[in-house]
Each structure stands twice: as C-alpha cells, then as structure tokens.
Length: 108
Ligand code: SF4
Ligand code: SF4
Image 1 (cartoon, rainbow, N blue to C red):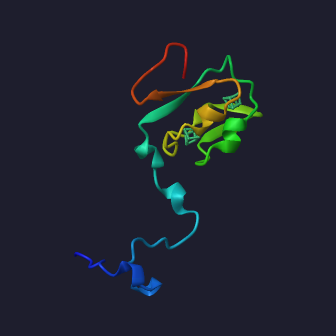
Image 2 (image 1 turned 180 degrees about the horizontal axis):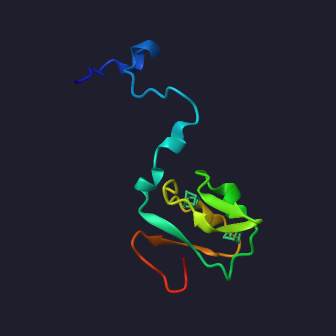
C-alpha cells in the first residue's frame, strides 16, 4: 500500500495512518530488547563499589541487585539493549562496553 502524503501538512489527526497499536501498558517485558544489542556491558567487580547508580539509571531494568550489591547474574541479557548508560554513569568506570562476542580477560 502506498500513501499519498502530498497534503500531509493539512491532515487532521484522524487522517494519519495507524502505525502501531499498543493494547496494554507495561508490555515491554514481553519483548527481548537484548536482540537489538551490538555492545554488551561487562563488569569489573574489583572496581565496583556497589553504589548502584547503574541499577537506578538502567532504562530497561536489566541490572539485578542482591544483598545491596550487583547480583552474581547481574545482567539480564534478554532485555539489556546495550545503550551504554550504565557504563557512562558508573562513577568508578567499573563497567566497560564491549562488542558482542568479545571477552575481556578477568572481566565478566
Ligand atoms: S555504577 Fe559502577 S560502582 Fe556503582 S554499582 Fe554500578 S558498576 Fe558498581
Ligand atoms: S547497557 Fe543500557 S540497557 Fe544494558 S544494562 Fe546498561 S543501561 Fe541497562
């Protein structure tokens, strides 16, 4: 289907084609946004001070906490989309973004 948008500036809201329908709020957990990721955060536990800034700032709630520190399985790879906010906001640079498929020695 091809839309004639030559008069789009004069369209009223009801004339815009429907792009997507979100039938209920909070359904993003049903989608694996980790599939978008080209880079993955890696954690240096020796440097981490457990300030939990990354946990607060992660927009996808993909960082797990246990006993007031990052959990052993700290990263939800199904939903982390690799935005890098955690690495950017960590005050001690304990998180490093690496390309998917890359391992750093001593870092997980
Ligand atoms: S922001 Fe950095 S220091 Fe703080 S909990 Fe996260 S990784 Fe650790
Ligand atoms: S890269 Fe983005 S989505 Fe993944 S854990 Fe860090 S802040 Fe969350």
